[in-house]
Image (cartoon, rainbow, N blue to C red; front, top):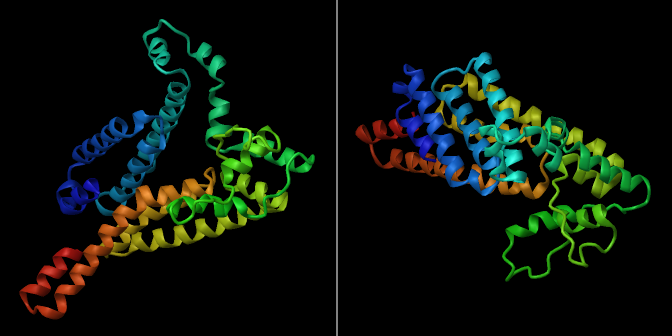
Length: 298
């Protein structure tokens, strides 16, 4: 929210100062990493920075494809190195100082580049496991129950003490065998849009999930292009909040809902309140009041 306020308030000043834009983005990345990323979540740093990068592209200055390529390389390097840190801890610093070996850390933790591409970014490994269990009779389809379970965290336990089985409960039984969750086992794997669809509806569900993703991408792309062409402020603020949906096929429903609450809802609430306040001034004030309203919305 603070970054959005800075960009909206001083967007004209920032438009002529690329170094200032980079400095503000770097500051956001450092703050996010220190207050949230060090807890072990790469997304706590990446998503806010990428969302704000799109905001800069729409409101301040156009981000070139060359710069996007640089950003992609930096993101890939960050995801890889921080993946090693999540598994090996401060041993990563030994490798950076030359007293340890990156290859040894990869071998011990299993976090190499193929794992990054196929596991962290695609969930292909765990999706293959779920599909194998389904095809060989090791697991039965959940028929949508995990989606209800994933949404149940939105309801206080005082109102819903008995929760439907979510993807953790069902996924644990799929991974370790029937009854594993009741025995105290817990799988922390993320299955992705396709993996959870296979878990619920079998192979056909996995195929259908790509149709759902295609619809989402089309809707998000259409709104983004309209915001790019539109001079109004509100669409340019909303579009950065929507585009990550096109890159969420590697997340389960509960992750997507948490993403909405954590990154989208606060900024969306500020935008909605701003528009409501601006509209509220116009009917009661003439002249000077209308000028104030335009300043709020411009």
